[in-house]
Image (cartoon, rainbow, N blue to C red; front, top):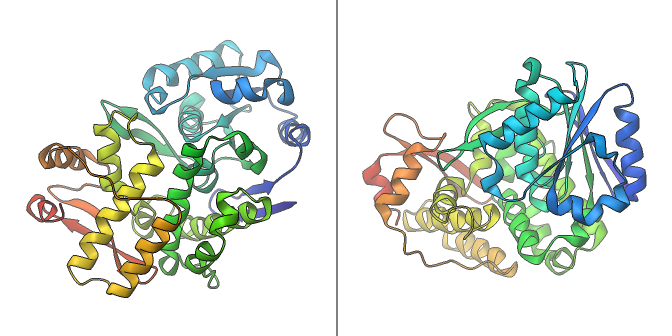
Length: 355
């Protein structure tokens, strides 16, 4: 099975398949046949797949896993390795791993010799449906997520769902947190026709939790069609693209407070969804029936609202440093109707009322 999606912004293709890994690597090597390559690979992925992928050792740089690795030190390690391997402006970096690897490799590519090609090969569900597409690249700095970054589009994205066979349950569910997010923003995205994604996720829950291949392919395709529609209209996040941050303002805050260990990104986003849906319902922005349907969908996938011991002042301080904040206002994406959200800028006093 193979599906090709086109991203107009950046003019690149996304290939979604269940091909054998040997075929995947053959395609990547053929796509970059006239370039020197540097594969930046997650250590976990390398240990699992080094014999199957059979990459040339001289083309591989291995980085440790985890959000804490998305730092300046590893960014410099990529730049130094690219220099040692004599990569020129005509060559390519290839990110093979989850969102951390994709983000830091993309940022390195955007700055090395003022920009060289890079390719995304995402290996987690979260990176397949979100971070590998759209050109957001970044590293974290002083506990602020993605503070240093650039918009820089890849040359191609190769998504192979067979990587998900070895993805552990927690990371898979983390990816489903980003998947479900798309159900709540579909009508804002401006895709050419209705996908009825909310309804589809309700019906396909059991198959998706079991990683049934056809269902996985379709869900990834639906998510990416919605994201592509948004990115094609607003590459630099000056307006519409902000809706993709649903659940992220609160989510990033608890992610940071947990030192990126207590909560995965997807888990934090889900808690952000509970947070903003609660606010929307309490303030009569959405009906009880839609609120209940949304809570039922989250619970259907095993997500539950967590209890936090974090102080409101501490979370607020992190939110104020968020990239989405402006002057003295903090930006939230808030549900306002079925499958619709709105951008709301709140004062610190207004944010306190959300807790």
